[in-house]
Image (cartoon, rainbow, N blue to C red):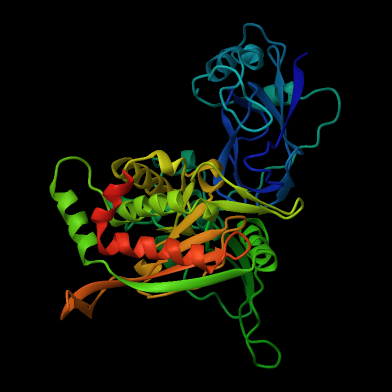
Length: 473
């Protein structure tokens, strides 16, 4: 008799308390290998695949797609430790060995995934998943009753029935939107590189208005520093009084986490903002000169990140957080620099770990890597959390200034506006220069206006005269 093990939803990063099931990757009766993903879930930070640390036969799933489940509650149960159907030489035994790599011993081999709460052994290779026949799946069920959620009927025909190859999409959320609207992704022509299907492609395909009096469900994605997603339900057609119905967007999941974090920031942090115009002509010249040299391209954001780390070395009080329970300002030893990145899913804030230890070239390489991961939807929760300072280049939106809400519990944020040609007094003469507005928002509990002004002035001086950075190398 195989042993039935329960796999609970682990903590996917920094104490997250719940996650939403976006998509099941297995069904009851499937044979899974050690570390094979069994579900795709959306946390308050990212959409991730959850690997199961046991190999065997799935005997139950808990929760439908779209359901919120708390961390620590059962996700699936898996029968491990022997041939589930009691067969030793029949046709059922071979698929089990092929898919699970001796599924009966998979649990002893150990999981290679290190998520909070499980996974410390050597990694097992990803293996092919094989669907067991229904009779064998029934025999694998333990004697005690197991509550199994019946798989919902798919909105799109199974891939095997369609006979098509896997479809390349920008993120799992695109698949979710298509699935909720019954849209076959194989029928779409993607507008991204190499036919990649973007969110706008799916929205365009489902954008036609439904018949009057019908109810539709639309999924909208929006993030502000970090990643956010919301599901809006609206009733089409006029209301009884002739006015359109209001759209209600549940504050849960990513959107709820962002709303709670921003509200907490406003409640707890007495923030203030100062700003200054700076001539960025020389900084752009340095960027162009570096681009003309050997090696990977170094972008403007990497140069600004290098300026930030130099400024924080001069003003370490701004790389802090406030412990309200103990009434202490905690100066942090490492600079984990968050930066805003615009993606098809919205605005997210990846974090460059130990940015203070990196050269400009290393900062550029890490920013490039994280930006690409953000655009493809593969950022992990660890890469979206733990920041100590944020660099916000809102100039990409064509705006000059901003007074942002601090990314709690951080104590400061540097904002960079658009760089535009403006009349400027340069060396005693009026000239057309490339000018930007720098804004600095800070927690007034960790410093006074003098320290904040000194930080911003140093940043502006480095933007206008990048050679000044040589003093800090």
